Image (tube, rainbow, N blue to C red; front, side):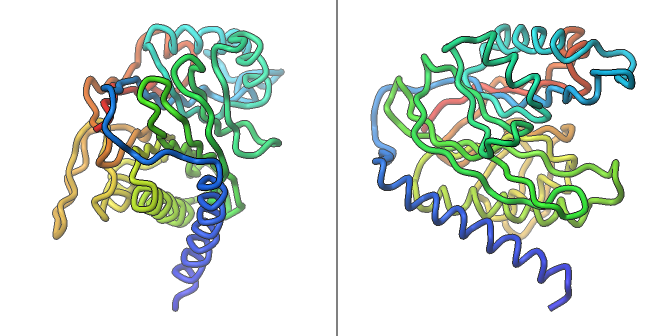
Length: 284
């Protein structure tokens, strides 16, 4: 087997072993299977908030205010978008601390790794309750491992459990990272497939994938996940990715998307160098 494929197989195996261990723990806390109940709808978003190390200090990026000012604006974006659950990227410690201080008990955050807040999942506590969380190892810059969070949340409307994974795949800013993105994509596809087949529950993927068609096509090739903004990838092809940037939201067959939004408004542009993407979700 070629070295690249062997590395990918090893990475995928490690991630799925971690998932299997996590699902064993999750079963012990009584995650409820999907069942008929009251209609359940909410708004999900993906938000790269532009890390504090890009704007704070002497070498801060021109055109952006410091992270504390931008975090206040980020909260305004979440409020006006009526977000209930959000995957956050580049959510560094100063932003994480300020967020928790500002929201009190109205929001909760799961980081996956105590020492690394960069990739986190946040939710409104009047809408969801924490069930269980774990992290999945994926390759990042130069193949170094980074841990991406997965969280199980119980809806306070329908009592159904949903699962959200949030990720940030490496860009090419430190050299060509296409190989590591391919490995990360395979791992993420495997995680969402296993969760869907074993839990029979709504599963979502949010993140800054740093790829467009090169993410959409391989990630959706097994037919498990669909994009918040359309596109298709039928068995036997051809793959028809939607017109989108590098930020994505996907869901499985237990979730329907409508009202997809890609927000590049002046408020967002003053907060981050990414759009904020969101969609209305209806659980099937």
